[in-house]
Image (tube, rainbow, N blue to C red):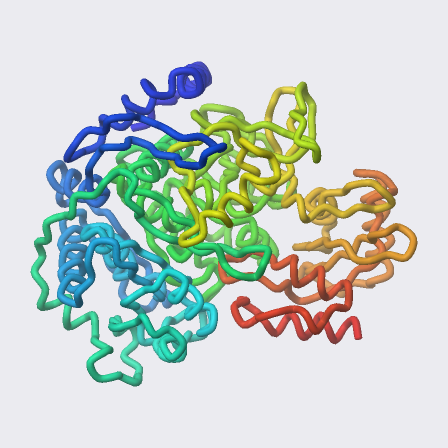
Length: 631
């Protein structure tokens, strides 16, 4: 149960976590099961980057996710799995059944010569076996690297090669909405460029006929059935790596962020429990995929560390109808619902009857994750989904941070539309200017940095510690630079304005793209907007907006251009007026739902030949549509 249950307790916890952090974290760490207690709570800083938490301690994270809960409530439901197609049978797993499946999978990995410290790549759909496998890796001390089931063969091979994986776990194919992604076929292509792979395990998801390479490929289903349901957990050091997760880099080469066991465990557990104010009879649903950090921290680890019951969903929000999310909420009586602004905006554009016909009375807490949420979407989410009775936690964090960093606490600290609000205990945010000078006082606006390490911070970029230093700590020595800009209001509440490199310099004035998008999204004819800068002969940079219209009626582009500029002049000032717009049926997005503004910037600048690999996009066809509109 959460211990921060009032604004006063939040302030007390925050003060202790920053002034007496050893006693604060020792008390929390003692609630977990350890084989050997730690010698030192924390060492290292953002100057030497030799960061350690609970050094000397020994444990296995899966004992804290599974075994201790099985002792207390073996028959409590851990997972409700909802398949892509609602006509297919759903599955439910108790904590006892989850532990048995994890142990079986762990024994399969051991039989295939996977040892402590080996890297295991997962390239699967959101089937329960993905969750089993990730936890099985941790059970035996292997390091898991999950690649979203849908990246191209080239992208998959690059990630396998970067961390030298010896085994890949995949599915025959992955149903996703009306489509099926040929995961095994893509894996075969990737393995041609990945010589380290010795074994491929295939989960038979649909039963489609696939290629089987003798002595390399094995069906996971059969191996799991014959494996033993007991597996002794490997005792690990606190700072041993738990997982590597790849995120986009400015150079085009993905960065493999490496997280360690104990610090990440405490951070995922605490942030889940406190931010969402989870109670033991609640039903939690994070709609993310385990291929992303949100699915790591708030499906795989955070909920299970707290003995939670949660929903795991294989499909997409609009299949077979746009009511799918709300049908699932009603079916399982979901109390805590956590999703991305992209999904909220997409569902906002659908017939409101898709929401109205569902019983959403079980909802207690709503959450937003992935990017700053615009005010129109926040208000719709609050009114139509939460019925203005569910606090919305607007969570800011990153792959690098391991878990939520800045957020209101549900029902405890105030929710403010589009504001992440306050830092969580142990998080010390500051704003700096471009010269690195700290911006004091309120209100303020600047580059968001973090002072002092927290338990969940990534320890390095796998195989390239120098890149880790240069990427996150070179801009402002001694500080972690988030890459985001932020505003702080007169009461100290933070609002994330977007990536600093998503700032447009118009005639010497710096304008955040998120700020412009917020205003555009208020227009009733626009359901989603993406704003980028482009070369302008007079201003240096102009403002280019890509607009996805609402489904109702036709839109006159010239009239919309005029109306939006009136709105921008009113809300921000004439310096924020648009120079160009394109109306489009969609925006290029990653498979986690993030808009690829890098591609949009290149299109706006007519740099069509330097777009790079677009095969990893959810909707690469949109890129061709946009280019054709400009040519």
